[in-house]
Length: 227
Image (cartoon, rainbow, N blue to C red):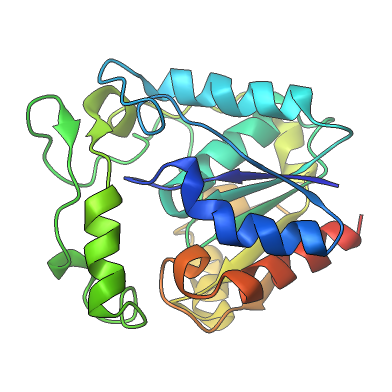
């Protein structure tokens, strides 16, 4: 099965390289999705441009794909399910949740000169980054791409209720499945309240594609094998 891999904020598609290799060994075709503004350095890229890139990757897939979003890009994966509910086989959300219709995509930190740079490690101290050693942190900062303001402050639009029929796997790295269930049941994640969600625990921090690529690939391959 084609497995589309969508990176979260500040990362380009190459962050999936190790995961992709493990997925190939397991018989799947990984497709890291190049996102305008993060893979091409275009400071004028918008959230809609990124949506178009993801939907185009869905349309180009060899059969209905598993669409994987990481962190903020869980919203991109979910928008793809909304745009192509009959075409997306399943969605895997890694370390994040989809925004609701009308919410901003990732307006998390103040932009500088038209882009939102990586804010440093202080906001991510604790479980998010506990498994990143000093070398991994330095490498992350060196590769981090400022996210264009028109991406981070773009508005999520959801139009087709059939997205709720698309199966969802919620991969829980720095939080537990019990945490995720409580947030959904408590109304904090309205988009998943109506979806068919399964949960899997992953012993890692917020960036398992960097710190636990084999384990993440195993989880994704097992999900793809279900379909």
